[in-house]
Length: 300
Image 1 (cartoon, rainbow, N blue to C red):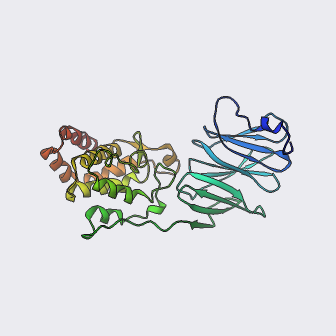
Image 2 (image 1 turned 45 degrees about the horizontal axis):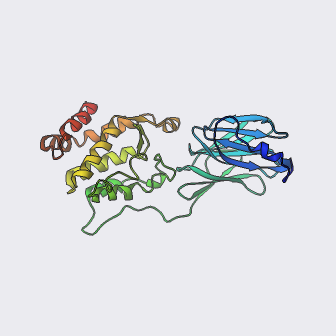
């Protein structure tokens, strides 16, 4: 269908009840639309979908065509970019290397490369043939661990052991923000400040763990041992620690081979048993002894 043809509106109309998250129109009126459940529908001619491209875990957030219309590219909240043959709907390659939700995808002008950008403003460039990114470009300054006046703290020592730009968490940004979010929690005084924004639903989502949960476990224990925390901040850290040691790998992490994140968190927590026993003995927060006991039960 040609641009301006009223019938073209039919191409982009949702099928069923699934919300459309991304659309693109290619040469000769070809179109592709990605929905909220990880399925892209492809129209090559007419108002009815020609094929369905299904393999993303979670919403498809970006789609595009090559200059000739022979190839389709899709990007998703699962942090993958996928290539497809338009005529057959056959998958060609899965491209990895972004740690945040994929926000945009494009083919290069000559059709030999695919470009993707994630929610942390990292751009990756791949060969159409697949493999690791040819190059990665950070469009924001490199991450850093906040260091307040008074010298570096034990939890910051733990944070500095890790390359946060290569670690995954549950949000669209990747884990680069995690040290800063943890610093806010350490300083928190009010319930709102201690809500765990940037940690809860990022490091873990309803007990499903992301890679960032492992270093955060060590950071929590270091902060509990040394920091003069408010009761609200201490409570939030214990809640988060329980989620880390009692969870399981998120399905998107399992696909990357990280199937034992909870055990890795438990191993980190075992190194801080003395801290946990002190928390249970002192019970600075009403009911915290029972919470720490749950944590210890997970470690046995």
